Image (cartoon, rainbow, N blue to C red; front, side):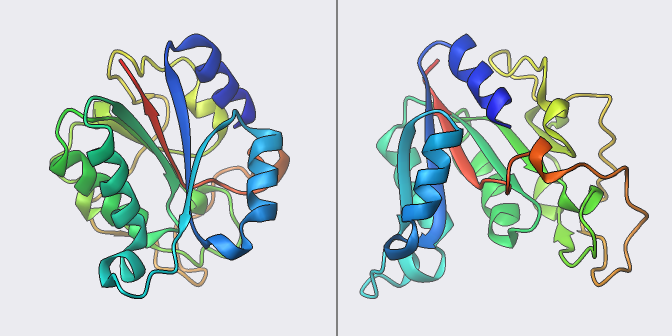
Length: 200
């Protein structure tokens, strides 16, 4: 992923990275240090401890995404995440529907394709009716190479999607057989839940 992000940063004009984590801001120092040593520099959002605003506390990812989309209505966004985050699986397709024209691509790493245990079934029902060109579930970083994201083609047809618009996998070892495994070093230490934006 560092190579993919570095390539996007170098090849796409006015590309800006915005890192969004739901980790409370009081414990994000090591997280931020890792991001800034490994990935392109950018802005950062963390979970505010704001108990006076219920939506900011209970639905933090959506709250932060709404805030950044409304702050930069002229920007187009690439949303990056993984299938272990149920809030991402709901929020990302909702952002595409709620902010038409602002979401350029949605990329979600399918962690069940390579991880042991399959503890995280995920719900793809929010993607029903969305043009396949606008999103892709990917397995390894190389699946994201050579995509025309500026042109709005965010789908690599060589990556099988197998999306049935409902719960994928059943968790606790009951899902479909795994694809070939990838070492964690090929994808970084963990998958980032990111909102990346670019000005086109």
